[in-house]
Amino acid sequence: MEPVKKVALLGVDWGSTHRRAYVIDSQGQCIAEHSDAVGALQCKGRFPEALTQLIAQLQIQPARIVMSGMVGSALGWQEVPYVQSGLSLNQLHKHLTPLREPPDHLNCLLVPGYVLRDQAGEPDVMRGEETQLMGAVAMGHSDGWLVLPGTHSKWVELKAGCIVRLSTFMTGELFGLLTQHGTLAAASGTTTQVWDEPAFGAGVRVAGHSALSHALFVCRARVVAGDMPAAHAHAYLSGLLIGSELHAALRVDTDKPNTLRFQLIGTPALAEHYQRAAAQMGIRLDLLDPRACYLSALTQLQSHLDGKPS
Image 1 (cartoon, one colour):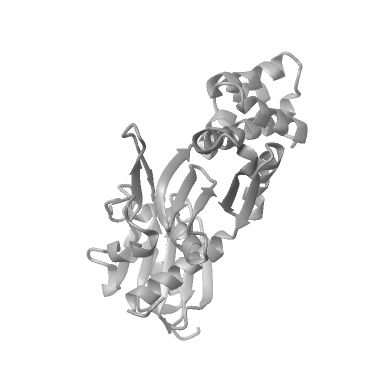
Image 2: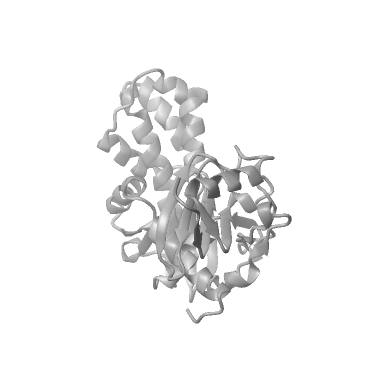
């Protein structure tokens, strides 16, 4: 068995269903990483054991551990209060929260999420995405719109490194629910789904001129009326949900959609459908690597915590 290695930082992106860990040395370089399905929901009541097992598996002795994501939520290990939108992402390190009673006396810090309110006073929140955004800012993306697709897709507008607008869309969750339960799931039945680009494009197009609840029913109507094979239902639904995100962003930001340029933080596989929908609507959607963003944030946090100029 290899000896335990002393390292400067262990960064853990601890989401609801998945966990990703990055080992950072004293020079700010990532020297090892790990991912698994030991999410916060699975770890309820056994977070200390889950962390110590991760450290043992990585065979490291970290001087500091920074954890972000749902581990700091009410469903996680220790709830960390949200910070307000006025706090620059560059100042997020000042609001890290020490973990109470950490296992083995480890130096553990939790990253807070953000809460924002719209003009009507309605709140929106993020927890986990702020760390990737901090990294994106450090990489030079301090202004403009950034998209973080997923179970709950986030659309974030930054100005000078501050979050000024946030809109969350339950795209991934809705897709999962609608394809497993209810009349849309019944319409697709047990048919093996086949990706169909025209069906996806139709969903994007319908999202621009119909209320979402009506457009969702159109998916079923297309199948039962014989206008679309049941095997194409998921492609249509994907286009409809992603298209609704894009159309909503255009409505709030500008009356000249073809001048818009978004940055999307996501893997190529996750971003592919978003880029196709954006291209259909004549707008640009550039890709940022989520791993690079997270590592950039860890480098920034390590520098600030060590008192070094970034």
